[in-house]
Length: 77
Length: 159
Image 1 (cartoon, rainbow over the protein chains, first blue to last red):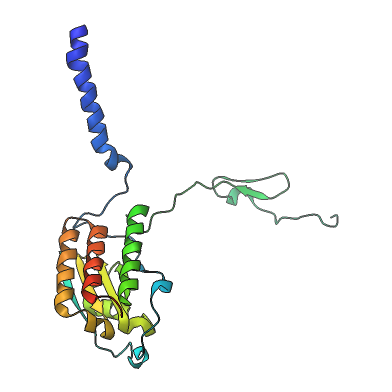
Image 2 (cartoon, each protein chain N blue to C red):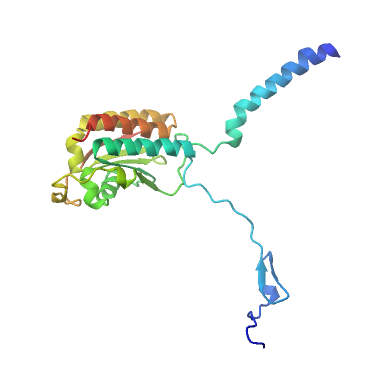
């Protein structure tokens, strides 16, 4: 009886604890994004607090937002 | 009827919704099941905090308005992203928009005319490649923060 307790019950208990620890994030965490998954959240648009931006440099008004040239890059995964 | 007495319109008990009852005074009392609000995004508060810090640092250092859009971009993702940038109005020329559509697996980086002068196409491509590498692993916040840091460094400090 004692042998079974030491050699079977204790290792089984340790395995269960470690198993639970690895499952913890899956059981309690929010569902996280994985590539290929649908994204059915409403659109979000974030920026820094406007107060941290330095005052607009001179000549910024000369550009027409609707007609200015834009640059950048694109990518997909 | 006495002055000041509260009256309620007559309600037919058969038209009541489940969980509703007419009290002795004639008022309808209804119990509603509690429905927790669905989150708007799958991020933890700590992740949002890091993202906000990265946005703040990048904007403060460079004097460019960094923004992040997360959501559907549609068929013509480039045009949609450019439209979003132009919608920023008078700040649009010095704005940098990182538009990510995780559902369509598309990333669009759009820079306004003033921002383009600070961020050449090569720098933009590098940042995009870096972000895409993280997004491939499913790490949206990590990719966005890395991208913001790279763009911040490339654009340099405001004089």
